[in-house]
Length: 155
Image (cartoon, rainbow, N blue to C red; front, side, top):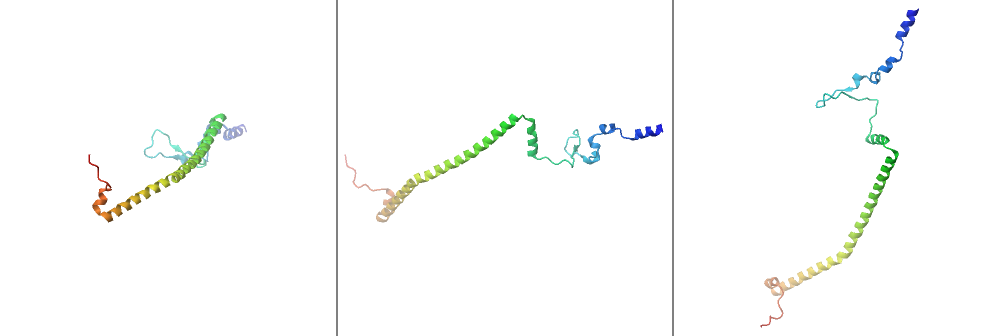
């Protein structure tokens, strides 16, 4: 009877084995299934990489959000304030630059268009005079320039 009790105690789980066993020995995670063999070019001293199927992949935004927990609240609030104020400032600067460019472009068109038209009209008149002179006096007279109306005075 005493041997039966000791056999039962030996066969029952005392709980110590579960403290010694690692998480990788559980049936959900078998080490031989979770190891990825290193590829060519990887360092031989680095141990094999583990990849678990039951852990979802973490996105960059989730990882960055998780990293914020290691900073104090005042740093987080300050960073948020600086970021939002910078974004708002950039948006208002963009809007202001658009308005300034519109004013400069429309003003330059309004101010310089009459000057450009007047210069063009003067060039056209000069070309017409040159053509009239060529028709009346010939090719050489048009190229030589305007004829003096009076000869120079002798000294």
